[in-house]
Image (cartoon, rainbow, N blue to C red):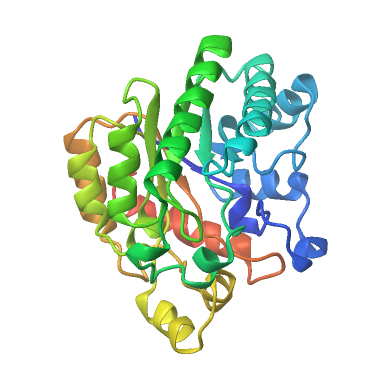
Length: 301
């Protein structure tokens, strides 16, 4: 049975080091509102956002009747020197989830998005020359495989890779290359509908291509009009977010009915996580969460 969760990023709790961080909503309110708007699970958010001791984390999640299903771990995988620190972060995150009793949760591995100026400035309009060199590709894949293997060997927890705009794995071609270079038994794909569309692809193509490798799904919509506004203004990734490029579900370009029909066809039986990335202080996250949950109900979930 498919279960529907939300995540702290929908409340503006992002992994980026932003000036707006002071406006970030506390985790207690976020968990309360996730529960109140009809979701049954959450992701962990950036390390330190929620409690980092297993008993306290379990208490906070359980007392709201929720489940914890994954944790986002950004690593600058193109840099060999970043791998050890990334592995340490992945292991401490996996250990926290494991000891709190969430042994089926995922490490959601991603690039250190927003840290490379060219990729951040050109999110949604990446050109081939902005990509990795062959040497960097080898380094990237080696790091992803190593983190996934060590986490699995140590805690039995699986790792999925989250492609993401403003990182090195954004376009469909970049996703294809990473999938080809990594071990399908170790590294699954976290398919994010909004990021895939913003990166220039049709999420249905990825669903059909990687049906066996999609272990985790993010529901995010993409508004091409807002992306175009940002492009005309020469805005970067954060400018696009501020303009609402990740709009409420059903108001953008992603065909969620077709997505749900296909997930049912392949007997996908895991989590769908709603993520409507906003900057801290933006909009009314609880109202958007309720809107998105109600929309998903119209799709039969």
